[in-house]
Length: 131
Image (cartoon, rainbow, N blue to C red; front, side):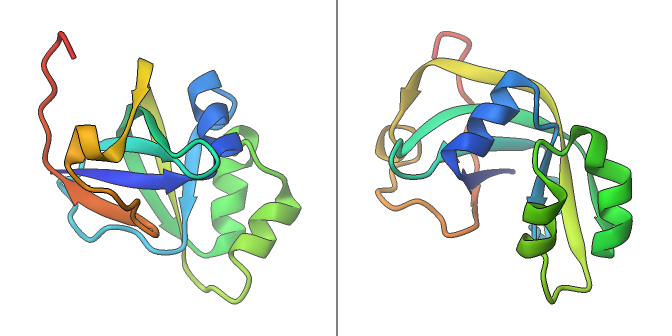
């Protein structure tokens, strides 16, 4: 089982450039067998740009999570604090083995859905090497 994540374009690009090595979430998927993330860059791009493997998911209080992830977060402390404001638990997905598609594709073509998930969506897709 894999997940499709909706990510703001600037953060999606930072993941593929290697600047952002953690994807932060207020809510995390419950299925611990998830090993791959498909990256949907939200509007104005509106396409699946690629995928990455999950090295680990770190769950901590926000201050502890920032201490662990800040050097490779790809975001400012101010943005982090605003994102997790009022939350006692925060999650970070450690990004590894990033694969950016040579041709970004639509949700319909890849997953047969026409609406992006608000946060995440479980998907089960085995792409061929030719894809």
